[in-house]
Image (tube, rainbow, N blue to C red; front, side, top):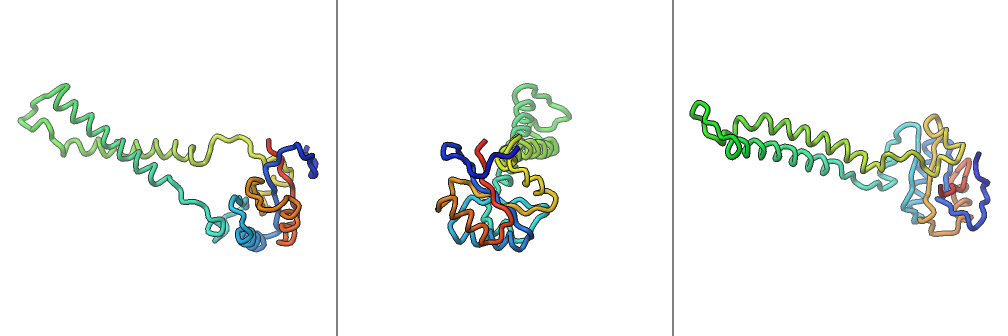
Length: 186
């Protein structure tokens, strides 16, 4: 069951959750809250909204760099392994070819690029998304279950409140929120 909305002062709160009736009012609220000085705003919608990520000022993802590093490490490590094996560990003169025959090293090195990029991509995605996270404080609000069906929600962390919580609740209602809840810190 949900915690009461008016929590005691010693209860730590994560922030506020507000529900909006449609996508346009959610986008307008995000713009107004950003203008008011709120930085840590999360939006939860049942489908992607055009322009929402720009209004939220989401940071650029580090995934391309992570995948590039994985690809470079994978390819260079396979190439270095082939070089070491053919020149140091087991030098075999086959058909008079040079020991460092780079054209024959390219296909396995390319496979190393693909493998390294894929492995770094999977683990990088888990790291960037903060997974596995099995619980989030907004899950404590029963109405949040509608977020994946037909609800438009905004979550604002308490550390980002430039004003007292009562002012934020009234501001969210001014912006058209159909419901505002304090989210307890779990």
